[in-house]
Image (cartoon, rainbow, N blue to C red; front, side, top):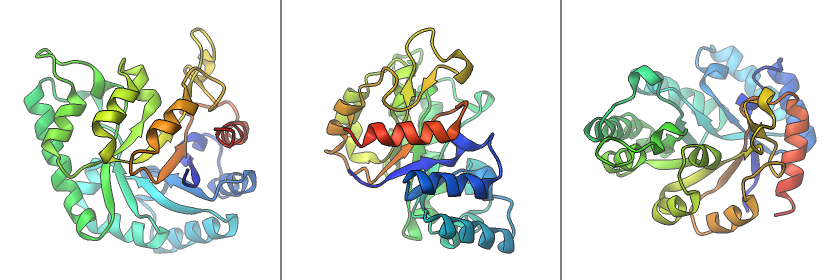
Length: 253
């Protein structure tokens, strides 16, 4: 397996970021994944300080999330941040509920929109793709699946596969890996608590302490181009414990 990363969104409620980076590095992670709120509004000096904090903590940031608004309105700014922080793969992470299409044609058009937004990123030599949640796997009135329409509209899109969200969307992750594995360049590694457990953490669990069959999934994912495996927990009570327990579990797979 490639080096395990840590999604900094998991620690958004535990500032300051400099301390988070030191903690993650000390636990054993060599990579982190960023998200737009961390850096989208930073000036050159603040970006340089962030890079210095990363260097001091012994972590790099090969992958990152950027919102569609910035990708479309300021691709040069995205690339400036990427170049400063060493980002090599950019993923668009989300679409607000009121912006989501309601039919197959709309989702295909959204895939085309992503394809267009990603062109400056790909032209600069970086990977570009979509990061899923659960709503992309809910069947449309015609029976098609939004994620399939996104891929149809965006033939060059890579996929950062968030496996736990695939499962929460009612889909079979193994079937999706088999069909679209060639697009997977990064994977979000998180776990789902047993029914009725961890309600105060939105039903998520530390990797290896939930219901997702990660041992089998890692085996299936070896057949894909995935280079980055990113630990995430959307709402942990203790991000340090999540980071520690998750990387310890992954080492056993």
